[in-house]
Length: 188
Image 1 (cartoon, rainbow, N blue to C red):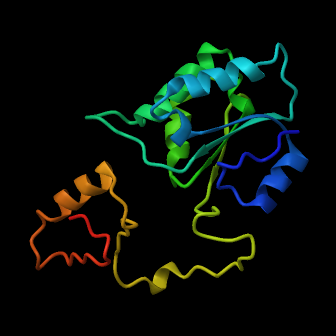
Image 2 (image 1 turned 60 degrees about the vertical axis):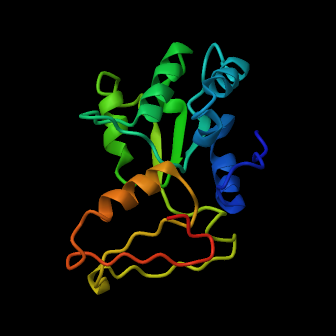
């Protein structure tokens, strides 16, 4: 059993369900090793087992952006994560990737293409986290057919990928796009 790390944004109720279903061996957050890969290596070195049980899991929280270069089909951080996982001989099935990146399963499938179908990470794609919700939220039925306009929220924080996206969007003719900047923390 691993107590939920304070830096985790997985809701406590969900962490409790994961903890009751799996033997959580370790935890890492992409934001912890994006700029310090030794954080991930240290976690694997300290928790590596000679033999893993069927319910052993590493919870890997991926709630930040990844970087894609040229024709890469997999993000750099995701690629690096898998390289290190294999370097430490961690079975892929022990990874539970909790992410807000809808569609990342395709990247995981590419990285595990040579692996046995039973040796694949579990990918949980969810926007539910403690930064946007409390533990007291109610399910709201989704009605995608009711969506009238596309929108992007940049969360009002200075981040290079958001600035790059803004720059690209600002090149679109104004009759095709409406750009709005609000708030006292505007940095553009």
